[in-house]
Image (cartoon, rainbow, N blue to C red; front, top):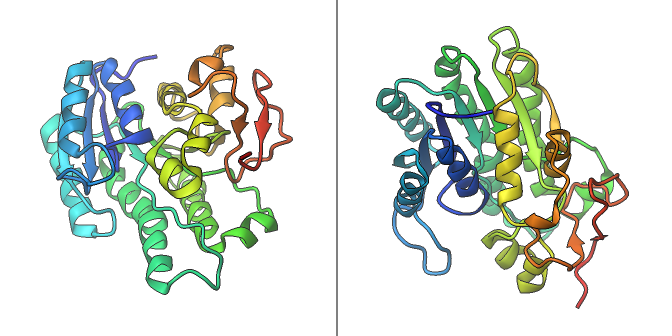
Length: 290
């Protein structure tokens, strides 16, 4: 199980889960392209494509920082071509870039609605499609998208319809491409966290420090992604997986190591059934407790 010498293209990987996935690949000795908008430091959020590249190199990988907006088709194409030219091909595409807005239907502004559809659904489609010609040349090609299982529960749609549409849209891209590119041997899978993950998005958009304490660290998603990407692509495709299920299947039994604050109850993520069996039987809660 190694990504040594493989080329991994990651969207939105300057921080959080995307960066954790990039660093896990780098520890194997992978080539990693970080394609994101953040070239200059953000006043509130840590990390840029350049600081991410430095961390990737320090972890043992080769890095290529690329300024890219997934909404811009020409930028997407140019970034992918630059990656293939620099490293001699592309073996893995990770669709990590995503925008979140949990407003209900009557509250969301049209421009915000458009933004999350363009980044989440359109960006995933454009990036995946542009990688396909290069992935066809790989001996174990994978597209991995960070989006949820398509459990069509009406209450999830009702709470935040625009965002739910966009995240399920990302999953639908993988659902269709898994079959469309099956004969090419390109694996197309989705990965989603059972619990909230301690990222800036959780802290600033969802629940502040309380929810961060009740989250798992990004490394659980990175380790799960690594386990998926090491699978034979012709056999392991069209799947919608939760992070700890993937790791349990790979033989992991200690999930406390991923807790941001060991001993705290864990906040179940949206689009995840709190009653579904969980490896290690963690204490899960649906609503933050003050």
